[in-house]
Length: 147
Image (cartoon, rainbow, N blue to C red; front, side, top):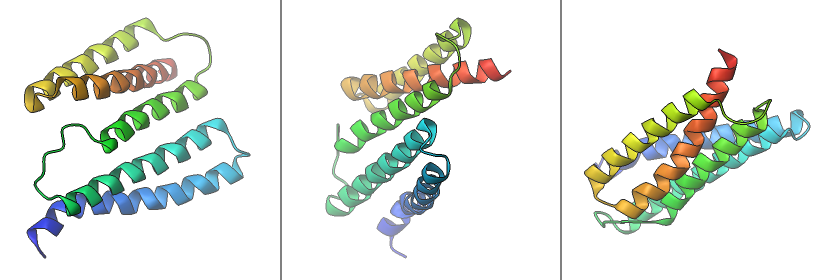
């Protein structure tokens, strides 16, 4: 097995898993009567699959080429925002719980700071970090509401 294929093996495995999850979530949409959360979940899996396919194809076409800001990163931000929308569609009540949401946003800000320190790409990391923070705030609200 070549080194290039070994480097792509995790992404190819993820593509296989996402393909299976996409098929299962499409069946869930049919069986649930097109529930909004199931539709969002199907969109999340399809978008995540497309971003991974883009990454693998780009890696095959231009190995070792630096890609500071690419379409797959916009797709990853869209995945975070779709996941936040899916969680918001499950939410009962109004507004976010203040404590968990603030904690999630602090966690997201720390992640962005680490990403900027690691890659040095300010615009890219702030863009993705904002979407990641929205997702975490919704996720923390759901977690706090269930406990």
